Amino acid sequence: FFDERRVAFESKITREPGAPPYMRTALKKQALAAEGQLTLTAGEQKITKSVGNAFTAKWCLCEAVQRLGGSAAKPVQFSLIDEYDQVRPGATLSFRREADIAMNAKPTLLTAYQVIGEGIVPTVYWVDAAHRLLFVISGIEVYILAEENGAKIQYPQDPSIPMQEGLRRSERRGRQGGNR
Image (cartoon, rainbow, N blue to C red):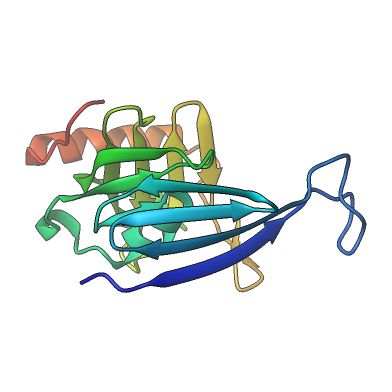
């Protein structure tokens, strides 16, 4: 299925909410997807790129991995649109591994999914049993869920010991993923 899709977004870097943009960081764009093409408009500039019928923006994967079914999840191929509006065809999102770690003094099973493909920095998304995205690791960038609904997430004070032990148990299960 592929229907016409539209999205408009704007962004800016500010020193505080409601303040004018810092330097020239204001950005307004519109995107229109139809018939395997993505048209991006920013002011007077309009660019059309072929994306195929299955595509997503890189940051949308943070939401998507929270709906996957663990080791039963089948690999999905699509075109990935990165943060620079570059289209990376042939991206694959797949299950990578599971790991037990200690959180709040109790064992917690985490599931990792990975995105790999030509021209894509391999990215690993870790979700817990409640399907909350806790960690994203992409090259030298790491994102960690700090709070949920105003409550701070309680991570172990020294996560290196239980994580290493959990990864060793995961490797014994024999469910290893791809390229890293």
